[in-house]
Length: 286
Ligand code: PXG
Image 1 (cartoon, rainbow, N blue to C red):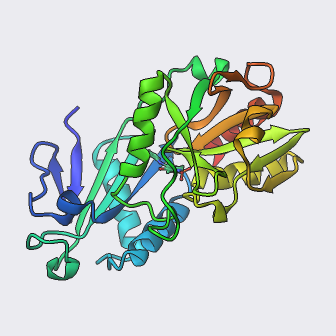
Image 2: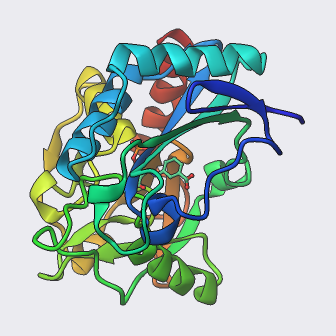
Image 3: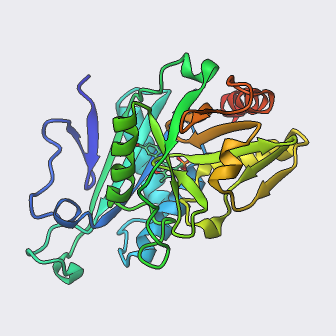
């Protein structure tokens, strides 16, 4: 598909949409991004994604030379130019072109890229039968070093954990923080249920505050479920009744084994199924 890519204000065919080898996004992973979805012609929680993007940029002292409203319009324009109704949108903002050396001070203009394309999900049967995951030996980066709330172009911490998942023959790995508490997976947040209650690690555990996580917490309340944000250990994962992951790409996906231990009955649980149904209903009418 010859998609049009929005780059620094221009819509260009994909092979012409290029960045410089001197862009600090490439040289140092200096930049931020967002992954957003459009369902049925409407973008899901665009405001929340733009807020997180601008907060991420502010946290790394990158001034985005557009307002959130301008960027929202550029995203809509990119989707329209590609005639998409159900798509994945990747917004990337880098520090821009500058001299060699890590100093960002010589980078005068951020590079802004918007890609809208179709997305490949996990295999459909995994949403029924659930996914096997592992706990990674690689800990999540410390909040003192670099806040995991920043959705930065530096995903090496997560990629190292993803290698562990690949080596173990599973699609995802859950990462613990330096205290040994559960954080999140390499590109998804994690939830468990126990005794009918929903539990997910809190902000302070050092996670990306997922937009899908937020929606699930809202849906749980509407469904009359008790939802708690509490520290979890590996013991809590292994002895959970149910477990599932949330993310823009994954949506809500059941987890039925962790480190080869069966979770609950070994099939997608009732609460997980209820939340998946509520999520589909929500994105259809959002
Ligand atoms: N934690 C991490 C570390 C993530 O990268 C999430 C949680 C879930 O957040 P959202 O806001 O999506 O519910 C993410 C999201 C990709 C891709 O291209 C990655 C994400 C989202 C969409 C696509 O690999 N990460």
